[in-house]
Length: 408
Image (cartoon, rainbow, N blue to C red; front, side, top):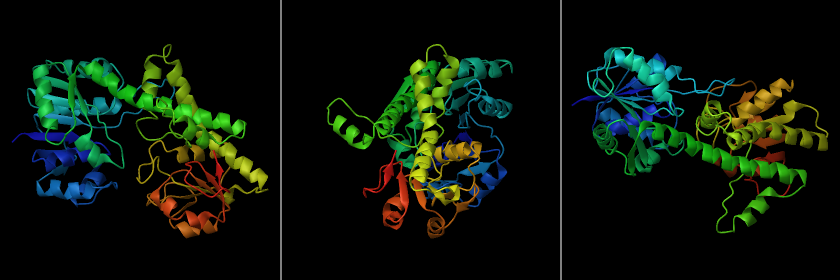
């Protein structure tokens, strides 16, 4: 049986490797992080996710292996990070390029090279094909290029791997059908075959669409705050219209998809992305807006010591341990810029200290503060909301039912 070598064992690569192994495919997961690889070899997961441990145990029983070395294989799945350059807003393809070159060092003739990492439209033409061609390989014979962008979210990864539809971008329909067959081992959703550039663009615009809709809700929150209106009541009423579905505002947008992918379009099409750029600016401004709300509450209640403020939640979304592009971290950065030091932090899902004044115990956290700012709607805070009723509460997620709580 031929090997599938999954490159990058983070939030996308690891679940993908595990579910392939569960399906009976011979899988080797590769990552340059030796401590991560050693943890997996020892049977320890590197992040928490519902259903992931059960999947891991099944994959182990089916013989999945982990290594820091790239394998000689017929199929590779690359799932490495794709950051953007903050100055230009363009994709930084260095991790993908590095992974591709490492594959080219060991791959067999006729290898199928699948890139799952989210990339900006045209990345494979501009950055990946030249890497292959300068090695003297013929694309379509020596190496087959495929773009199959991931479409899962932390907190629901295993279910979405099995049920979400997938897109496969290829140069050759026959190869596309072979890759469709591979993904059909675990994917029960529709699998669409298209060209590579369309696959690149479709993934980016999915997340851009979501970013724009979130921005509309966040802008409404700012408008309503200016006129002392209840944005949540207004959205609830407006959504009774059969063709209206306004999302809920929040303290910002995090994660490695919605907060990053739209910048790829802004960077590549700067003269054409007015709406997209505005949405990005609105969503990036929300941590600053939260800071202004904290200031208003402190002034109203004559609290001058920022160390009496506690931020609940470090992750970018509820009930996960993923802190990538977290609005709370963005807010802490803005506080730092304004010399506002000493704010307290607590998150039940973040098990190690990653910021100053981070508490590991919820009661200790509450004992030190007068203002609780709910940044993430973890089930933990919903279940323990009675414990914060005697505090001043800024609820950016609209989970508190008591009227004394401040909202966005």
